[in-house]
Image: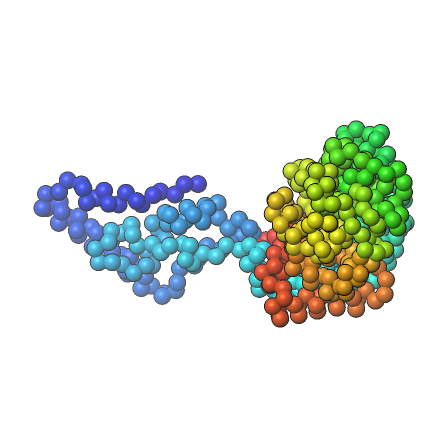
Length: 440
């Protein structure tokens, strides 16, 4: 919508000079108009109400348009210069109107409330009510563990979601990759190992079969799958302590993985499930499994050619979320990638231009503690590095661990080790992936 421009007011100075009687009549008309405006301002004395923002789209008029050409009718309450024409009497709307956004809303939240939104709390899929208090306190997600989902999982999760403050969404996550890594195949159907899919199925077949599973996942109230794995690894073995990939990878061919990964991702989205592409920047050929100890990826110079293209393809295809690995990347990071501002900020956000949700792999991994970080300390470092959501394994007192992580984050903001603006940015990404609008 284009508003009228008022830059042509100066043309009045070049207009032909009117006869005396006409000039006198025009002066009377202008004086009367100003008098009417002044009298109108002397009514109740109540200020003019600014437009109210409705949802995230307060106006169909771009802010720049409002600034460049304010509406004449909005100028009546401004101070009136003695020689100004009536059309100059409106205030600039940009001075009074405030557009509501998730960012402006989150700016009013406490640090503790923001911190809770960045945490995914682990829970057994057979007893999801165990984390009701954490969800009620504002946890941004729950991570389901187990190998056989109860038949009434959907009803249980729906009851859990009813405790979410402000009805602002909850990420219900699980690992439903295929093959030996499927937590709810009994409920939603089974997929073969990705290595089988990459070798025997076309991308269209991958997308179609994944959609069938995703549709049932969504019906069971599970809205996020920590898949697909787009690591490039051609080793024909099951994943193990020494090899995190093997059959979890679609192929040892970068091209095959790129196409299969996008197809799998699109199948999840077609079925109403958020895909989380993993494990950036690529675990193929890793020295060890980071769950069990320190691990290194292939050299960065190699990963850039072999491991990054599947992530680039996924990002170009609209990937909403990416998981970062706990491996050190020789030539790029000295800490695990999930705790590295170079890996997340410079490479994933910067060079690859990823705008979506960044989640860590489990901070319970032995590679994290071997690097000298506790789970709460790692959570702070991950957020500082550009991650938006942190997760940890089931075990021990989940409530106590969740509280410790939230306290570490809030303390880090208080003492200046974590910028509040970074915490707000992380919270925005958590809300955005679920399409939550705090203004509606």
